[in-house]
Image (cartoon, rainbow, N blue to C red; front, side, top):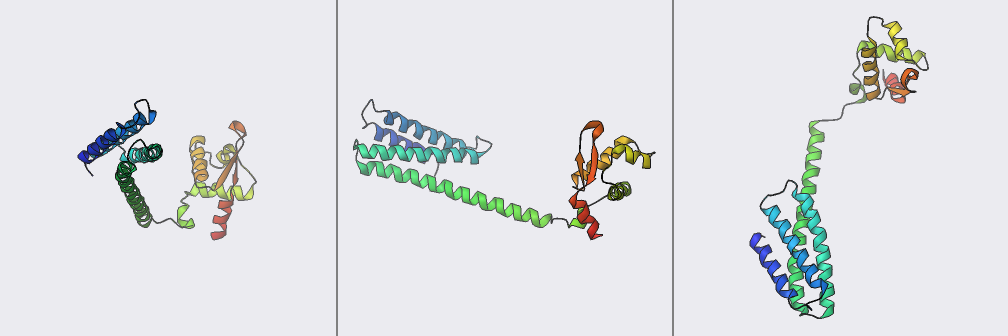
Length: 202
């Protein structure tokens, strides 16, 4: 299917709708949809768009509406049902091509996902936890207390700035080892269930 194919098909639609009653709105709606479908495929074929998948999806919707309009026109007996059927068959071929493309894209995405998983195997629970000595100590303190604040840890590590200690807590939060409760000066940290799971492994 090339540009000429879509131009010829759109011309056939125009010739077909010439036989519709002049004031019939379907005459113009069918032409407009045929024009939109033609414009979309020219853009795709000539590579004038960044994401052809989105445009194909939009075109697929327009083709469905277009087919519905043709069915209505066929029921009115304005033209030979055979002529409408021939046009419907051609547009049906286009829809099948889009479906094939979508299935191909889906398979490609699945392939890439599997490949990515094989190249980057998930870490074991033990490998996932990468803590420095100070963060290990924070977890030990939390095992002995229900909850702590940054200032409590600062008393144990007076040489370490509060800013660095906050970064330690952020790291523990990201790894799901601690939970944060409260706000601002009332912020406390508690052990999470994941930290307990880690403890049972060691």
